[in-house]
Amino acid sequence: MATEPRIAIDAMGGDEGVRVMVAGAAIAFQRHPHLRFLFVGDEERIARRIDEHPELRPISEIIHTDQVVSGDDKPSQALRKARGSSMGLAIDAVKQGRAGGAVSSGNTGALMAMAKLALRTMPGIDRPALAAMLPSLGDNDVVMLDLGANTECDANNLVQFALMGAAYSRTALGVQRPRVALLNIGTEDQKGIESVREAAAILRATQGLPLEFKGYIEGDKLSRGDVDVVVHDGFSGNIALKTIEGTARFVTDLLRRAFTSSLRSKFGFLISRPATELLKHHLDPNNHNGAVFLGLNGVVLKSHGSANAVGVANAIHVCAELVEQDIVGQVQADLAELRKLESATKADSAAPAASIEDAQ
Image (cartoon, rainbow, N blue to C red; front, top):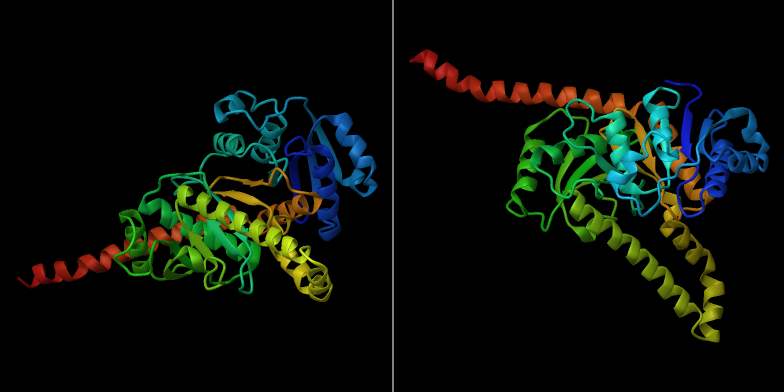
């Protein structure tokens, strides 16, 4: 385990770029004084912002580039900039071992394409998945994956996502035996498409994994806290995520409108302000910022493009946790255990037939 993990930061991505990325690193450093940073982007602009946070000077290095992947660039266009852009160089730093993980607020599709090309998918994983933590009524956040990297998935993909999501929950949230469920249109065994039913059958049959399979979960139960990991294909997951985010904004805006509708409402707001502030904090996406590409030979985190400094700090915090706890090694170990358990299950199922033949 690295005692001083270095995080590569694409300083040019996101809505506000250098200012918020450097400010976020400064906040993260307050929480984790052992962190080190490798900022990638326009050296003059980055150095000027670091001067505003002098505590970062001795623990920061800058890689200069004036090439930036824009939010409008298609993945194919971004790949042509991979060697010289701030996003590409941040990922390359992970590949070369100069950094333990990378954080970017830039173009999600471009980041995924570059990360997959540079770091490759780890053995035993067919497709990487985009995972994030969302607030719940339970003791900890719920991990959801895939959130858009793979619109179509087969049963094996979903089983692999379950393993990766459980490893993420153990690493980032400290849940020793995460409760895992598959997102479905009902909780009955016969419900859902074939790939989901097949994945459920595999997870039920494979005993001994470091997770507890809870079956299916419906969309209205995602935030109840009944499970720690929710698994789905990227199409369903992205829709679920955007619906949750939209509902959170709807509730916040509705409360704001209600509390400003009359003098009596404004007075009621003053009385209930502690509760509304708690609700606002819980629903603020900056407090749950950071989506990780699981299944790669390295750690790459996507920060929301509109995240403020606190949001960027949270993304850096998650990245550092995954690096320190060796999420890549944990997923590899879980995959090896899955293969061993699957082989044992197949051997056990074949044993009775062999004994009957011998008896004949």
